[in-house]
Image (cartoon, rainbow, N blue to C red; front, side, top):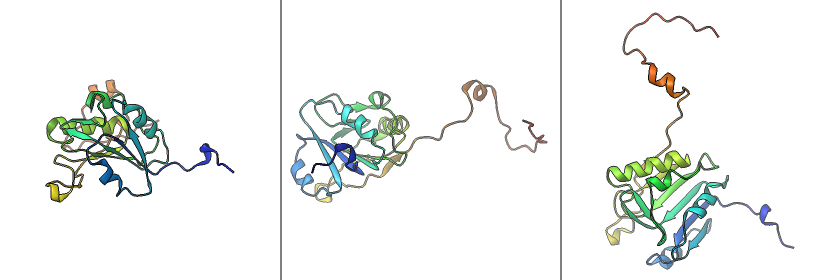
Length: 180
């Protein structure tokens, strides 16, 4: 008896990488069995699988493995994912999603921090990345993703009200209750 695909459990963790990534086989040999793997070929656009992953409500961790530079991530030979591209991503279905960028120096410098914040804002996910080299200590690198970005809390006031109002600073003002 075959189970319906709709009834199969969705992954809690998903890893997206290029099949052409150097030494990928060694890395995948150590992949946790709980992590679902999606390998991309050649110039395949990584955005559709990333968008599909963001739509999975049960997803808790999305691991993106690639080649990094400050403020950008290359998963395949397709154009890099940068802040401009990240703005086009939709919010994740899961409010507890963490996106791990396993690529060297993605979060480095002002450009890197900006990319991480834009990615966090557009996906509503917590983003983890590194400003150094990612890899083992024998290679002079680290698997510690020491940089984090999270989406900012929303502001409950519309822009015209925010622009026109200045809240008092360090003054004891008589307060009158607002009647609604």
